[in-house]
Figure 1 (tube, helix red, strand yellow):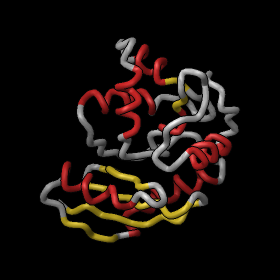
Figure 2 (cartoon, rainbow, N blue to C red):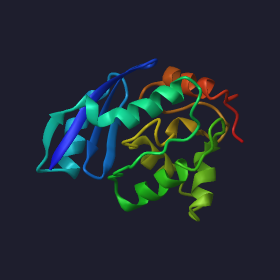
Figure 3 (cartoon, rainbow, N blue to C red):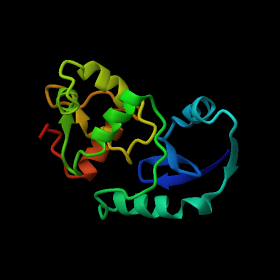
Length: 169
């Protein structure tokens, strides 16, 4: 399987994008590009990487619009590779509206699995498509910033971009 990749220079640093024939499958935040290879080996064991920036025109346009404050929701084909529970969690995370936040416990309730907030946090931390699936919009039970692969400063920056007060809504 051919996996196309490109580097996107965003206002928060270089993002590495990867897509399969089915859609965008991975977005590496700045400094976390090393996670791409293990991800591809796990979910696409017979892959071949082809650098092809032209294949990401739509993704780059939408990311440009997002960082310019002109896009509130992404409309992209995604190839979400994750264990079933993680997929459920990430689909719920994807429903969090722009400029709003939720807590891990809130997501557990929405999934009909109260008491599984730690498992929800674990799934959220393994999001292969941060920003696109807005895991930065998930806060702890006190409505505070915590845990983000790109660091808390980046999480705060993304929430600020969305005019978010960092309070759980």
